[in-house]
Amino acid sequence: MKNTTHFDAIIIGAGFGGMYMLKKLRDEQGLKVRVFDKAGGVGGTWYWNRYPGALSDTESFVYCYSWDKALLQEMQITTRYLTQPQILSYLEHVADRYKLRPDIQLNTGISAAHFNESTKTWEVTTDTGETYTAKFIVTALGLLSATNIPNIKGRDSFQGEWYHTGNWPEGVEFEGKRVGVIGTGSTGTQVITAIAPKVEHLTVFQRSPQYSVPVGNGPVTADYVADVKKNYDEIWEQVKGSVVAFGFKESTVSAMSVSEEERKAVFQKAWENGGGFRFMFETFCDIATDEQANLAAQDFIRSKIAEIVKDPEVARKLMPQDLYAKRPLCDSGYYATYNRPNVKLLDVKANPIAEITPKGVRTADGVEHELDMLIFATGFDAVDGNYTKIDIRGRNGLSIKDHWKSGPTSYLGMTNANYPNMFMVLGPNGPFTNLPPSIETQVEWISELISEVNAKDMSTVEPTKSAEASWTKTCQEIAGMTLFPKAESWIFGANIPGKSNTVYFYMAGLGAYRQQLATVKSEGYQGFLFQ
Image (cartoon, rainbow, N blue to C red):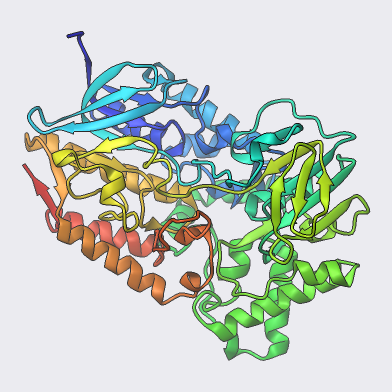
């Protein structure tokens, strides 16, 4: 048998989570660690999502790591929001600055990870045929990284170019081309807005119209940057104690407690200022929980669509009629894009896509829409999609697919019963927030638990089945207090045919989540079994 290299810990994924996990375990605990990533570079989600218009909808000053004060002070903040190239270059800088690259193996996917009960180690196989063992395994696979390409009849017959936004190649040219975009979620709205001025003609295939507000991106002043850098301690303290962790104070005012006139003024100010999460959580405290408050926000956004879009029939198609209870979107001029003479909107709920043909897309009414390029902005098999693509097996050979057949579960969003010494960064039922602060919270907590296992000379740690069941129930109860479960969205797995519609997030916010973690730890890691 060939010698297998052994590590103290193997980390899968070299994005925000995997890189910080490497730093914690290697530099603070002196462990022998290797990170694997199938990408050709670091950056995770931001390595793959290079599509035109890719932008974070979290403001620059809180879409970063908070753990190094010097890094925060040196950070280049030039715009209110960060584009994909800016985020990728930041993450590449982090990899260089902390000398992380020697312990990151790129162009290497993980095909299997099996727990060996007799040796109490994980046996990991790569897609290049190498095998490794490790005491601990940390999956930092990303929430939005398993691309979802819908299985439309004739998909492979199309003779033009086709791309998925989540796996975008270099050097795509748009000039003089007839382009079709399928999907109008966060990614779709960004792509559509970015490419409309460049293409000869754009056909948008819209299944569900979206509520979107302006993002409000633009350059920031030197005073703004100086103020942020001076107040970083207070900023992070506020973020870590807040609900959505976006760097603003959430409202405590209920929408119906003020007059209609005042309500509209608050919405108008938020519309002018920009930001999707700000519009949903900074205006009033109950838009996500009270139907009347939610309706007021819907009506306001619909009135804006009517105001912006010149053709009343197009405006009508763009107006959602369901709850405003999906991940809040923001855009750089999305609705106004439909005033362009080269942009056509098709409502594929009313007139579905029948098939993809060699020349384009045929809709149910028999019309063939001829295209040179087709873009799938159809999102991701979110949260658990990347896990079920790897053959992960815990005790008694239990596959993660079987463990999650009724929907993905976890204890605290990070661990699973029967999967000893396996930790997930952004696993199912973690917090629904701006992600870097949640990632840091989890990486730090996992790191402390690994340190505890090693300090006590234990071989394994895993949660009990009852702890996992009780966390799932908690997440369901909290989600049930909001309007989110009533809207069809990827937040509950509704975008993937056959996927169980279940809770995927802890909706009580980052502050409450951090309190839960502190309690579990202070009670001697309540809900965990050490062996």
